[in-house]
Length: 228
Image 1 (tube, rainbow, N blue to C red):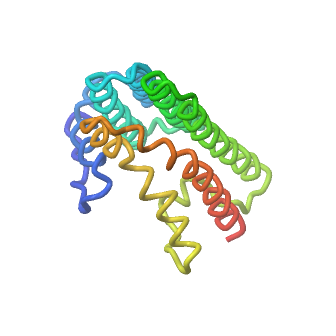
Image 2 (tube, one colour; image 1 turned 90 degrees about the vertical axis):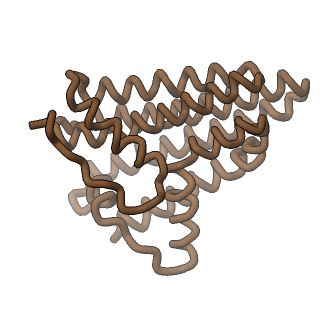
């Protein structure tokens, strides 16, 4: 049955990476790979991407950008395969979350290091580390929310929030939506485009600030969803 399963065609342009996973998932369904295997592949690709950006080299930057797109694509596929094969698990969800923050944190730290090596200015490294710290804090926010969900039967689960997303209702909701939804899904495409022009370093000052905005808006979103 899995060999003939057809995924629904994406009916929206964004996220762009969804159009890639839509084509890759049917291929993965024909293999013996489990969702956790696919998550691990995504993690390895993300770490290889980070390794490329530590060098501050244009061609390696493009390679790193392509690896990050591949990592994001596999990250989309693991959930699709889990749902189709009915292999969803709490461990798989936690592994996926951990892999996501490791990839994000390692990318920004590596980009900061590589840029500092090229420019000889440690300022860039500190920007990368600030962005990586923001990714870690957001991961901790997720862990705290999951712990609250376990202790409170009325808490809204991550799956329920994903299947029935709350529509933005006011200015704060829209800010949260833009930062926490739209900026996340196709970040890898942004990285690849910037890498092609050898200006990926532009991300560092924005990421150092934006990563903090991301976990703060995540905290607000979790709090609102938790009490809804």
